[in-house]
Amino acid sequence: MGNGAPQSARAGLSVRTRLLVGLLLITALGMSAAGAATFLVQRQRAITSIDTTLLSRIGEARLVVLGASNSRSTRAPTVTPQAFHSTSTALETVVSRVLPNSGEATLGILNGKATFAPGISTDFHLESIPGFVSRAVTETDGGQASLGTVRSGTASYRYLAAPLTVSGSADRGVFVVAVDVDEQLAPLAAAFTTYWEVVGAAFVLVAGVAWFVAGRLLRPIRDLRLAAARITSNERSERIPVTRRDDLGQLATTVNEMLDRLDGAMTGQRQLLDDVRHE
Image 1 (cartoon, rainbow, N blue to C red):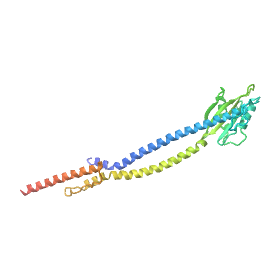
Image 2 (cartoon, rainbow, N blue to C red):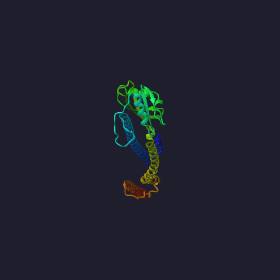
Image 3 (cartoon, rainbow, N blue to C red):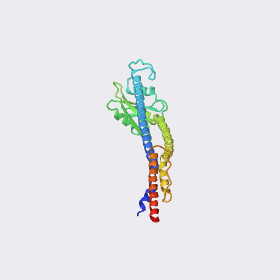
Image 4 (tube, one colour):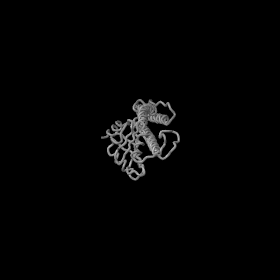
């Protein structure tokens, strides 16, 4: 029982290891927090940029309905009332002229059914997403545009649905434009994959440097332990070399002075015993 405590103490983690673990834990938490915060901020900026794109596409559709000569023109268009006599004609015209870019898709919904699709190939099809058409119709039922996100499998799409009706027409139309969020965020994801690779390499480098520095800093304590193990009643000349002027150097100096006093006391005690034995 009496030897249990010392053996348990010797079996524990060394000070050097505990210092390394603590430093690496703080480093990992700091890098992770910084990376996560930066990713969330950049992702929100990308989503805001997507919303701006969607709004601009709806603006192009509005220009088509009002009669702009070229909805893609960078010039200020001359807007005149367009002679649309039915919602179906207006919606078909908008879908055919507001063409989606890469990573985008448009759809014309007439009377609750997906009716018009762009005349070019798109990366995805909104009408193929289960429940999306009815969702867009319901969300625009009050006559207001609806901005939202829909998922299909592992893909995520940001969309803007705007009601489109022509006065005097009994039909009800909805024009929808959507953007593939994953495609837009792909450069950001790639950048942060590289970031975590760099963090991993930096973590290994920090671990190596910290292990070396901790060993250098704790060397006087190790020398103290070894010197104490070598000191016996017959061999008391062992001293700790003092090579630094910091706190550990002062500790080594103090221990050496203590050893000097113990050596002097033991020498005096032995001399006293020799004198008594001689008398």
